[in-house]
Length: 251
Image (cartoon, rainbow, N blue to C red):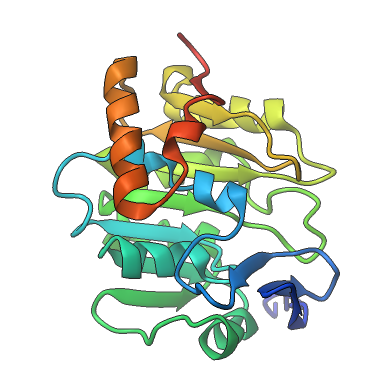
């Protein structure tokens, strides 16, 4: 039996008001870059995908390993690589996305600290080489219709958990007209435990970022506020603002 051939959408981009947007065959924005600041994070939900910094221990930033499932416009990969000084691995199914990121979204050349693996993320993350190696996992997997996460099962989230070091976190973007926040949370809770989960309120565009800790913790509010201020000072992310809408699911 021949393997099933997956039809991948055409990749294109548009520009408006100094911002370049990535598209996968539709008008849906799959990623963005401010042309004058290519290594900063333009979209609010993408900034929130960095909330794992609130829990990162000393020595992880820089020097740790960040993995992105879904390259998009390369924003998270570029930020972790250039701004944080981390080793980065992105797993992307569509080779056109990689080509466009290299040509039009300022993705740096691959090397010892930056690798893009062209593969199905669900299969790739089961590889032994990745188990227990990831300090920050960022999951943003959508097809061209952006209707719901492509991978959203308890088994998938269990595979994600196995990637993480003991102090690591996973952040996930939940979005789409067919997405179910409660269903996705239940599946993450099955893999990580309810106490491991934290969530933002949705952005104006409807993106809800959820964070899952490999090892659940409950830092004191004062510690989170101090950490948020440090993040804001060092990397110019709105981390103090995050704390207004970022809460653990289980007190």
